[in-house]
Image (cartoon, rainbow, N blue to C red; front, side, top):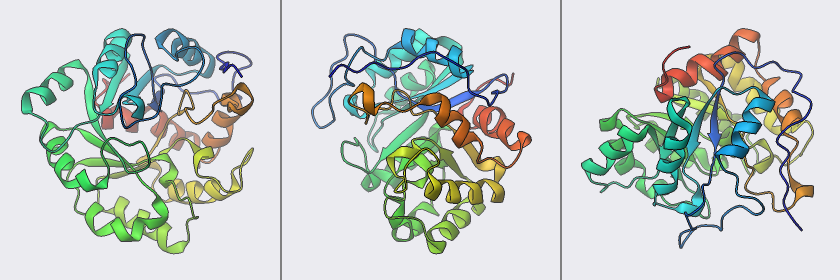
Length: 287
């Protein structure tokens, strides 16, 4: 069955503030093939810059952080082409390794990369085994790190995460596949209290066990973290929703936007999460 992504329609009821930054999405340009070890490219028409710009106009997004997709593993060529295509409204999160040469990191930085990705789930190019080494390189470059793993095991990883030197983001609502109890939530709060940890609202459907449209289990955790540290939240659309393989599976972005942003405690917190916090975290000029 063909994959058709909805890119326009009635706007979300939530009016996104000027300067809104989508901090979690992937983009794919023609000519960049999937690499061994990762998933295939997304099905259907390639989710490229033209599609994403239409999506931005619909949802109300002004700026974007393009994350290296698992399909391209450690080859950042597509990401660099996307950054060149999108220009100054875009920043990038790349895949690097502990032994990535300084010259390569400088090349990535010059192209607009301001972050490194740790993806400790199937298909990820660099997992938690590379955490300390990637952290050292990211910290030296002044980059942030986006860290994704099964958050249900966060207590096992907390001692290492507490020693991270870079600014880092606990990705995708923490990805608590087995649920988040009091111990896991308190661990997130302790990491935030360490001074260099942020929490990303993105891809709620990937870990929710209760499901939509309310995603009540993830919502409960998200509301608590946002109330505790509203200045430590960032948001992303997770476009083009790579886990969806058919049109019938494709999420309703309008509903997702309204639902997820309703978990922020105030208009001020929403402005922080969408504009000022990601602006500083990813090196955008203030608007």
